[in-house]
Amino acid sequence: MTELRVGVVGVGVMGADHADRVVRKTAGARLVAVSDADQPRAEELAKRLSAGPTQSVRVVEDSLDLIAADDIDAVILASPGFAHAEQLFACIDHGKPVLCEKPLTMDAESALRVVEAEHKLGRQLIQVGFMRRFDPEYAALKELLDSGELGRTLLLHNVHRNKSVPPTFRSEMIVRDSMVHEVDIARWLFGEEITRITVHTPTSSSLVRDGVRDPQLAVFELANGAMADVEVFVNFQVGYEVRCEAVAERGSATIGLGSGVFTRAGGQWGGAMPADFRVRFEQAYDIEVQRWVDATARGEIDGPSAWDGYAAAAVCEAGIESLTTGRPVDVALADRGKVLG
Ligand SMILES: NC(=O)c1ccc[n+]([C@@H]2O[C@H](COP(=O)([O-])OP(=O)(O)OC[C@H]3O[C@@H](n4cnc5c(N)ncnc54)[C@H](O)[C@@H]3O)[C@@H](O)[C@H]2O)c1
Ligand SMILES: O[C@H]1[C@H](O)[C@@H](O)[C@H](O)[C@@H](O)[C@H]1O
Image 1 (cartoon, rainbow, N blue to C red):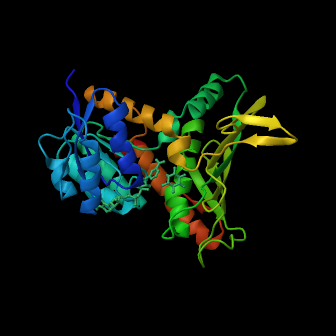
Image 2 (cartoon, rainbow, N blue to C red):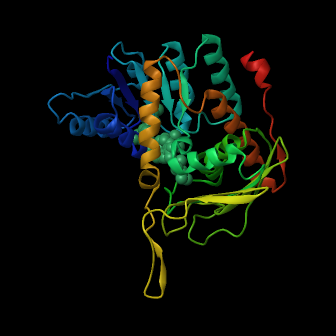
């Protein structure tokens, strides 16, 4: 099998991690080029990753040129969400498969245009980076719930805490960039769309910037009547913590309790907490990128689709509206059958 020649756009925290993953851990793929609005950052990474005898990574100044390049078979998009729409349309124009970090785009309208443009092409090129679906714990939970062993799933309780986030992180980003993971997980575990969302804003931590609502407490209502709640607290100070408990008719199942060794000793109990998502979800990212590379070689995607990215964007848009009023907001979702015909 020939190697998939990959280009990475945006090499900040996540893009640099993915670039390194392609070089060191992913079979059947080769990192060919990187691009970043911050050129020195791209130069530095390319130099570091070109160190091996067989690896030569070049820098392409303009991300659209990287996407168009003849020697790039597929793209990993890890630029900020505001840059995704233009870069996704370029991938569609050039027929390049793309693993696009969440969020797909910044709003439901542009996300739907992406879905429609891909659909017009007649094949799926876009996979969205909802990597939790590849996390072995989440995958085991899904398998258990789908087996029916516990009966119907009725409720999900989620906790999503980051140690801290950059100062640019506003209240809307907590919905669009962080809560979007629970939006995807709820849709995926239930296999149902979310029809209504309410975002409550309890007292904010005194450690966050003026006006930022953190933590947030959201309730999702699903088409089948099930519900999910999530606490998102992105300035938790302690570490990275992601938990999910599913409550079903004949029992419940919880994941995310024991990252690392959980000890009971010397009158204390507890374990280590990962500092961030790169540690907690390392295995999920590895599996995600490997399966994306394998599927791309077959001309397919193997994970969350552009529709999943759009549906999440529509829920987050309603969530951002609810954030300001505290009232439930119905999700306006296009008719899937009509869009994908
Ligand atoms: N799946 C996950 O768990 C996860 C984790 C972190 C971030 N993300 C997502 O990954 C993306 C990047 O986030 P990050 O934390 O790495 O941000 P970051 O700020 O660390 O990196 C973004 C990089 O993109 C560059 N950039 C800005 N505009 C650009 C443009 N138009 N074209 C090319 N490069 C551009 C910046 O210079 C920066 O180097 C976001 O969509 C974010 O939501 C996903
Ligand atoms: O962009 C990041 C990323 O998506 C993480 O997985 C999430 O935990 C953070 O809250 C978010 O800021």
